[in-house]
Image (cartoon, rainbow, N blue to C red; front, top):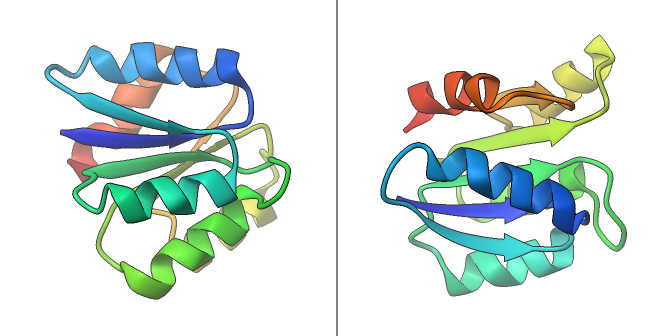
Length: 118
């Protein structure tokens, strides 16, 4: 499995990476914002799943999600964010997110949210 993890916080990327590694044999590609995420996805079209933050500089997670969905409708994308308002969840799902995780979260919550998508 190959995961693309897009988050402007290197600490948060490390936490997500460590949680994803508990799923087994995984390869991880990291990006610091949506612009880097798009470039990384173009270089790694074989990604199994994308985990992306919402609030990032240069291109936020919602814009990144929308751009990915223009070319790939099938890859599972999970938003990971502090934006817990119901309207934000609805917006992300309508834009094409397959699931939504609110920070802070535990590795078990991450596993629970992404396992059905694999």
